[in-house]
Length: 301
Picture 1 (cartoon, helix red, strand yellow):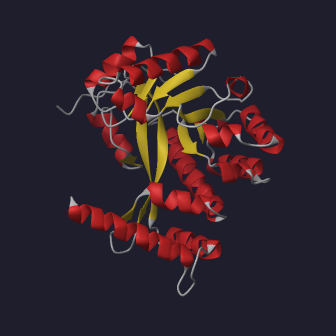
Picture 2: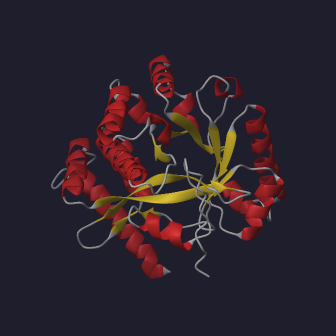
């Protein structure tokens, strides 16, 4: 474990060094913007997709798009390191637009190939909401890739959703009016206002994995999960449980009438090319296509 810790520290140090730029002490947002741009040009950045499925039927309901960064020497930089660093400045706008375009391109490709017709979820940061051109950028990516608006979900944290001014809330309303769907991520880990929750255009809440993974052994965590699900349903919202890793956790979610699960119990995040293989090997139900039957691929064992 000591070696793993040293490797992680080295990755963090490398990322901080990149943001500072060569010979530049302190934080240099311009340097990190250029490093992100270089990573895109060198194809160091990639996307993976974690499946989501109905808690009861295992029907596939969508994917969450997650960014990955592999340096030329093979070192993987954790998203919880480079994404927060990008959010400190303008680098998040470049990273966010690239992520959105890559995810929409993949989902549109699945749709055109007749493989899947399910939404892809993309994380949106608080700083991206400050961008006055956000609405046009998102709609432009949908037009460019050919992905229907209903096949895109934008995930925002509680802090991002509830700390914004009138302009950002208007942008969210415009995106929702265009048919794009909104999800409130990591519910319960930030600060919430139930009055505000009634006014934001979200269709679903995601329960943070810390509660989901603790609920089997921790009575308080179980009570929180059950209460969040009841609250969401009372507001006509659906619920996604993140971090589901065991069959026992799934049984608890079934008992609490949760709607959707996401986590290693179903699948680890997949490459875009790995999605077809996942559909062929795993027991997930693909929604009924017009003129065709539902498909249940065989299990791999």
